[in-house]
Length: 444
Image (cartoon, one colour):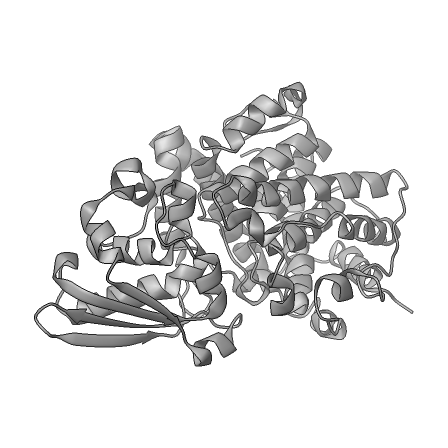
């Protein structure tokens, strides 16, 4: 019997001998550009800044680098960079797995690539392998897994491990054992971000660190339980509803899920994007009505959006990013939800706060039934002078069926990186990212 870990390992070994399809390579670079933007955005925020203090013993030495250039050991680089890339809530999404693959996967890939001193192409190949393995596992685990678990922490561990194992050049047997070992490391509870905390980005960082560690252990000969994903006491049954593992393996090597990523167009929880997009469309229908002239907003969407973006009266940046009412009110009052939306002055903006009191949120059973394969919302706005309009938002701008263009990604990249590293350096880094397949190393 071939175990799930072995099936993924066999594909990875075969893929290592094949040329990377051109469109897959391009999408890997899109993911890398988006991840780097998220990395710089979060590098100067806690918890990344606090991790540098907490883990000082592993800094200023080693073959790897943090976002702003400080040296680090591989696992610590993966931990800090992975946490930073998930902090500003601008990192990519694989919709079907309810999962942010970039933060853990690319952080681990970069650490392993700098540790192993491989080429830019080998780095990108590792990223692709990490995305394919983890996105398929995440989609198989389904909505049942998302009830309690934060997929970026759990599923991200597989992405990080597969990426690092590919880059370290593990053979199929060692690769399978790396996946087996990382499965028992996979963790991250949703409760960690249902009150104000810094734990959510740490899930991505810890997944990246665990992935590098699992690959290094397997390279040294550490063995894991190869049936740990599908067995009776394994990952699928313990943390979901016993998935059918034939489905994620059926198209492996024929369809590349990295080509189906969502890139965020708003700097907050992805569950709020359809309501934001829908609200802005209704506002447009009403001739650009001002927020102060709106008497009522009704948002109907799927259950996890209501449960995760749950803060009714957010008082911190982290809470505001997970407040459906706050981000919808901010969009209607200020026209967008960008990083400025979470600065102290904006958190207490009178117009936004007053509009929040006039927003109603409710469950739409039809929309909920389509989750996670579609992220939709119905939005209705009524004005104080009695006008009313509504809109069904079937998807989010940035989803695969309404994608951001390469130029959109470049604009997002500059918006997030220029304030941190300046225009000239940001431009130089971006040029390197788009040409990564020809680079001699994985330095950013």
